[in-house]
Image 1 (cartoon, rainbow, N blue to C red):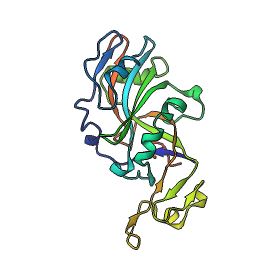
Image 2 (cartoon, rainbow, N blue to C red):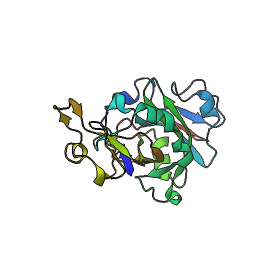
Image 3 (cartoon, rainbow, N blue to C red):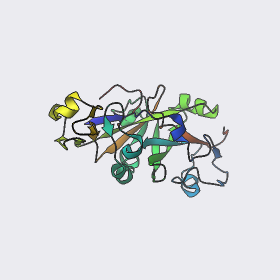
Image 4 (cartoon, one colour):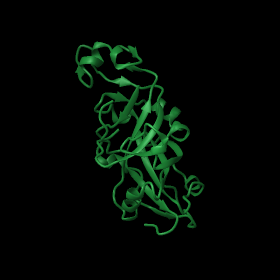
Length: 234
């Protein structure tokens, strides 16, 4: 199954511990401090962009235990996020609006990932191609918002109510077929799909995100510094 992550989270949750929204980083400048408790200054220094790319430090997603399931009823556990965040690097690319069927459509690359235990979220360092991601580059230079959404492949998911394991939605139990994201008083639980083994393959810049936690934290340039979003349900 392929799933797109877009929980409903207030914007304030995104920067609660970051202390700032944008930090401009030139390739030859010294990084005086870390961008967050997860992305160290050494990690940023070792991944600074060349003249053909720009860097974005962003939040990809948060733990279900902290932020809950998304509006599609997908729940991403802390253990899964902490264990599999690096698949963003090994399998993922930077896309635009989830145009992710072919890596040839990528507008950049994922350079590094980190799990922020304090803030219960995955953070990424991505490089955007200045030509392929020209729109994003111009917005970043102007200090405008860039928002993001992720997609993941999962071999199966399980029901939060009865633990039924399904490899496709046709195999869902009645809880997930008919009561997704609803509170079931007889079970004293909400019904949602738990994704234990995600393979993250897409981090997309989207214009109209529903996931307000998936947002940029920092931009970096070479020179003139300055379960997703808006995708349809899958």
